[in-house]
Every structure is written in structure tokens, then in C-alpha cells.
Length: 231
Image (cartoon, rainbow, N blue to C red; front, side):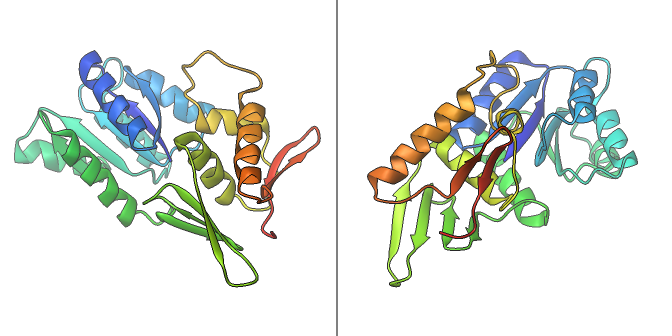
């Protein structure tokens, strides 16, 4: 899953991003509300969660939320703010925020609230994803393959392998370009590497081959990649 974090406090933003990345989220972090809106308008990526600070330069988190809802964007949003009065919480929720977390907070509560948003949001994929004979389990970061002889083979995945397989399984039988995959699974602020997707695909195929399994993701020449629903 990809999160857009909008927080102008450098130390807090850096800490939140570090924790989220360790939990296998892909995170874009910006410090300006107007820049965040440009991310939404550009359609480079598909976000599954938003974390907005209320008080931001140029465009507040409150206004950012209002603009999203005005465009019928159902993105689940967690609002962060030091404004903890009941009237502030009501204003934030009425603007379209789905939850409200008052600063200062502990990271464990932030993660718990994100998990709660995931459970309440039908557009977010479940923690266990099954397509054909393949099952991806977020609890143990593993891909399971259900063979015809009724045996089940479980293959542990790295964080990036997990994110790659999850994204492809969420789009079965659909051809996705390498640039789309890169924009979805790698930080947009990182220095671009043209072959990063192809390199990660090679590593994934090598991993599965070491377990005696064929990779369900095939390369479509000059178009991209596709997750086959058949083993």
C-alpha cells in the first residue's frame, strides 16, 4: 500500500516515514499542502491512505481534505494536529477526515489507527490476498502456492518482493508498464533508476526458482508485466 504523508515538521515527518517503511508501506512524504495536491492531480500513483497535518504551508491539511472530498475522492485520511479541542476534531471530521490523531502521539497508536482505517475501507485490499493458486499473507510476508496434489508451498519474501507481488496480484491478468510499477512501489523523491523494476523482477524470479517454482509474473515485450492467474 502507498501512503501520502503531508507533514512539515522535519523530525516528525522523517520519523513517521521511517516507521511506515519498516511496516512495508510505500511512502511519499511532502511538507507542503499545495505540493501534496499536485501529487493527487498528477495521477502518477494510486494512494491507499493519506496522513495530513492540519497546519501546513500554502494549503492546510483541512483544505486538502476538503478538496479531495469535493472531487469525490474516497481516500481514507488520518488527520494529525496539535489542535485537540472538541470543536477542532469536529471540524476535521466534517471536512472529510476519517480519523483524528492529536500530537504528541506514540508511533504504535499511529500504526493502530492506520490498521483500523484499512479494516473500515472496502477499497483497501485485505491483509490476506488470494488469486488463483497464490495466497499472499501480510502477517508473515510470505507467498503460498497451492499445488494440485493438495500440498502448499510457502516462500518468504523481502519487503520489496512482497510489495511487488501484492501490487501485481491486485491487478491480475492486467498488463502494467514498468514505469507505472516504479511510480507505485518506489519513492518518487528517490533518484530514478531506469532498470529498477526489471532488476527486482529478476531477483523475484531467481528467488522463486530457488524453491523450484515458476514466477507467475510474465514480461510482455514492449508493454510491461502481467500476473498470470494460472500456475
